[in-house]
Length: 153
Picture 1 (cartoon, rainbow, N blue to C red):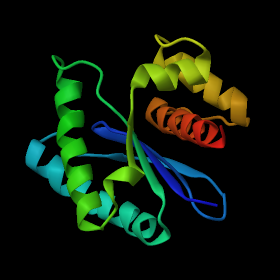
Picture 2 (tube, rainbow, N blue to C red; picture 1 turned 180 degrees about the vertical axis):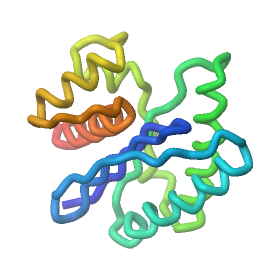
Picture 3 (tube, rainbow, N blue to C red; picture 1 turned 120 degrees about the vertical axis):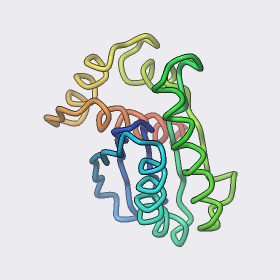
Picture 4 (cartoon, rainbow, N blue to C red; picture 1 turned 45 degrees about the horizontal axis):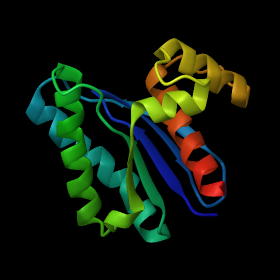
């Protein structure tokens, strides 16, 4: 089974990892609010997550930004730059790095591309029998679901 790391990039980055054994794990990392601290912590945290992915030839999937005019988008762009740099450092080739639009993830999870974070959270919990409370973690899990379903054809 090919491993996949799915990331919802934000100051509070949600992550879901399916390793080769198939036992899915999820969580989040809270990044500092100042830009320099955020980039340093993001780089360290991503290096820890990407090392096993690099050696197991897995896929890295992340949710792209939504609006170029809002601060959350700018923060996600900063984190995305660190993500791509760290992936290159670990030798993860571009063909194993995939950006997915938020509307695509929302539509897959709920049936509508303009779903709210609460609706995605509810859909993920229902699909997997979970009791997630963090919408960033739910978004990363929905992203993993989308990617695995897409790969399954």
